[in-house]
Amino acid sequence: MSQQPPAIDFEKIRNDSGGTVLGMARSTFAEVIGNNPYFAAGGGLMLLGTGLAVARQGVVKGLGFIYRQMLVDLEIPSKDKLYLWFLEWMSQYKQRRSRHLSVETMFTQHDNGALTTKFSLVPGPGKHLIKYKGAYMLVNRERLGKLLDMTSGTPFETVKLTTLYSDRRLFSDLLTEAKHMALKAQEGKTVLYSSWGPEWRPFGNPRKKRVLGSVILDEGVSEAIIADVKDFLLNGEWYHERGIPYRRGYLLYGPPGSGKTSYIQALAGELDYDICILNLSENNLTDDRLNHLMNHIPNRSILLLEDIDAAFNKRAQTSEQGFQSGVTFSGLLNALDGVASAEECITFMTTNHPERLDPALLRPGRVDYKVMVNNATESQVRRMFLRFYLDKELCEQFLDKFKELGLMGKVSTAQLQGLFVFNKNDARQALATIETLRDPHGSF
Picture (cartoon, rainbow, N blue to C red):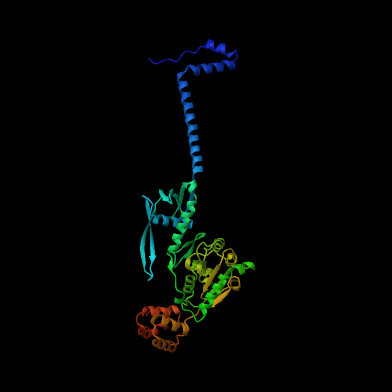
């Protein structure tokens, strides 16, 4: 039979209550709770649960305190350039023990221009333990839910490094090593940047530096430009002492195919600079974003604004591309004037139609040096021929025929190069097919 709870002693309750109603209620409650084993057991469990919860919170807070005192974290977001540098460093690190990997396809450009494919295995999302200079580090590569970077279509990610607080100095050593490894891979190459949202990102793979002598301009033109640029770079203190914004603007104008953009690429290689290409007709580009981009140009980079005359041809933009750029002319002028915060800022603009440019754009401080890059002159034809064939006698015959056909000053260097490339191993065939240069759209 089940045990019955003990009867309530009302006489005892009256004696303990002192004769008051409140006292009787209190005494009755104490009698019921004290004599009921179910209430006693429940109260004990409640006290035990409360004690365990308090103890758990104490352990959590204690571990958090110990973590903060003994460990240190370093977080690298995916939008930071160090992110890719670190992943590449991890893929090359000899002592890594990653069991979860991701693949990144990379391309290597050789001296002959050929590209080979390389598969780089980098740590995948998750936790990895590495040992660097005798210290253990926990690497946690984490994707932030399902959020995507709308400019690149890739997930937002972070890499968090954790190590002992006493070894925190190794973070700087590791990141410096990763940076040097990344920059070493770019030695002898030019990095092209394009705008992705509010930031600059590498566009494609670094390109082999173009030799300055490979772009043949008219006599003295290239030498004058390079001399002016180097003079500018050597006189930064002179600008600062006089309170003059340390920037220099160049305008290269002339017909299509005359070598304007090619020369800028070769100049960047000569100076060991990179190139930031900004398309002012880009969809959704606004004045604010333009100003931000032009004030955050990567160090040792040339800012290139191609076909500057077409940037504000809004009718053409709307009809041909279905959108209209949000950049205004005044916004461009303000952005050019605001580039003062960027050190050693060199801006190159190109145009096929200089007569379409507003005089406000061409004033000193925005455009300081104007150079006409025209169709091939006699000097350019001669030097280009000898660069391809090294036959001086045949070169004179080619020049005579070139003049006889009335091509001097009417053929671009791009057309001329196309003829020579098509007949790269046969100078006489190039001479025999010289008449094809009469038609700028003709084939060889």
